[in-house]
Image (tube, rainbow, N blue to C red; front, side):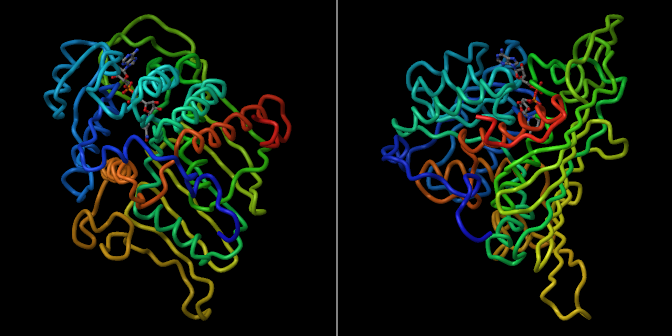
Length: 419
Ligand SMILES: NC(=O)c1ccc[n+]([C@@H]2O[C@H](COP(=O)([O-])OP(=O)(O)OC[C@H]3O[C@@H](n4cnc5c(N)ncnc54)[C@H](O)[C@@H]3O)[C@@H](O)[C@H]2O)c1
């Protein structure tokens, strides 16, 4: 991308930080949430110490959950020094330096703001919050806390797939030239009628359905890869196909509730199953976005294609080690889609920390790389790829909000309307 860097590409210069004072000392992490993301982040914090040569090591200090027995078992299994059912207890005193928020969306604001006020850095899951108001409060609290040297991070982990980070680099180097199209979709299929009424189907807890869950990722990825910001959203459609669902009887898998106990009670989903929209970008590109939990046969198909005047890139998380690349500057007899295996240590972002070429990495390595990048940033060293902070993630939340307004009011919505 030529010209001015967008928020997704850069960090504002910060005052001398708390972390600088503590350079060299371990970063003591406390996590809230012990299920799907609790496990993914624990893998990340543990793995970052082992795969990367970090300027500051990471200490897994405290894990907070809700059930005492489950929390104690989680802490033991994943290497946390202490387990607690009182997340606020980790904010008192000097037990942790950074709080990792891995709880449902409506809790992000309360937990993150309390942690910042207690003088902790915060790494919060996405979407930044369940509502724009909560997200704005988080952005403002982060801005205030930054004056005390505190930093914020948001777990948009797909930025740390080597192929996505490479796409970001290729655009930044100008290899795609002017960008015409962004075509992004995040397709899952676990939201069918048999899936119970988990918190992900409750708008008071989740804020939205596939939209905040999946569009948040591809909005962030589009901003990160292209370096352009959204100017306008239009033509949005928000649809709930399965409103009536079984109220879970307890237990079951973290995402789909699979294997949980049956119950005779039923309730209503108050979120979308899919949201589609069109977009215009600051550099003149146009884009299409689609997220759904009902794309039968697509289990975690997080895809983006960017078409520029000099080339195109295409990424699909179900083939996460590969970036497809079309170089239109080649003689026509040589042009074609190349499949770049993004596993070459010296060349591909993050690859050098893991295995020899074509010894593939997986979902968890994105979290390992993210934890390593956070540790680098807290030692005032540049992360491999920029990490979104609360201000950056607020920009993604504004796009989510613009799309919902466009769908409900059936009109184009300019981003400057959404503040
Ligand atoms: N980055 C990604 O790719 C990705 C993937 C999945 C989920 N997420 C996000 O991660 C967050 C958590 O999702 P998940 O899939 O781990 O959910 P989950 O249901 O598997 O786990 C939620 C955890 O939060 C805990 N919790 C809930 N209420 C609490 C409270 N009041 N106090 C303390 N702990 C509480 C639960 O006990 C549980 O341990 C959500 O914001 C979600 O959007 C991100």
